[in-house]
Length: 112
Length: 116
Image 1 (cartoon, rainbow over the protein chains, first blue to last red):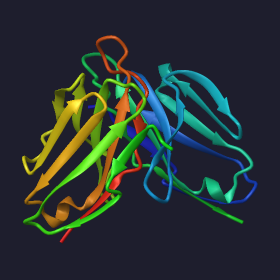
Image 2 (image 1 turned 180 degrees about the vertical axis):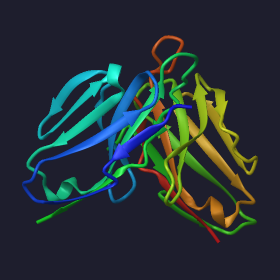
Image 3 (image 1 turned 90 degrees about the vertical axis):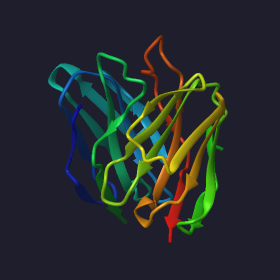
Image 4 (image 1 turned 45 degrees about the vertical axis):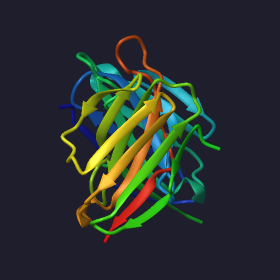
């Protein structure tokens, strides 16, 4: 099956700093989502971005499908950005049935 | 309020108990999913329902029994669980795009299960 690798595994920032999280995937995809998992466990949708670039406030994401990677940018980080960030993909071709394959996540800690 | 709600949020059960997790989505989606998140492991897909029909069982042990009475509700019946089944169980829904469910997934808040 498709493999998803996220880097870095852990990231510690001072409030106000910028950061880039990376997601590499091993095959073509027709779905790629970025999530933020809050301390209570809920996965919050950040972006649905199988290709192209999107921005939402301080967050933006870019997926270069032909090179099989996606980047999540966090600017002017805040303590509330702390948590685990997941990249998840559905491989293209065949019957995907919404089978998201998750990366192992990036644990982000933002200090005041 | 999220579009996908799960109850209970926390559940503690013994290995001989029978319990159920409930998921309800208010998004008008036709596909629903159960995912499992164990400590130190990536999220794993368990089951997929498309228009109330089960279309995926990812080799899940029979002590987990899903039920989808309609497109808005999904249950996970639990029986004779093991301590290693302790995990966060996440429900999700999506709107299928054509014949393939390539739509965006939306998750509930999760049910944290502890098996003693």
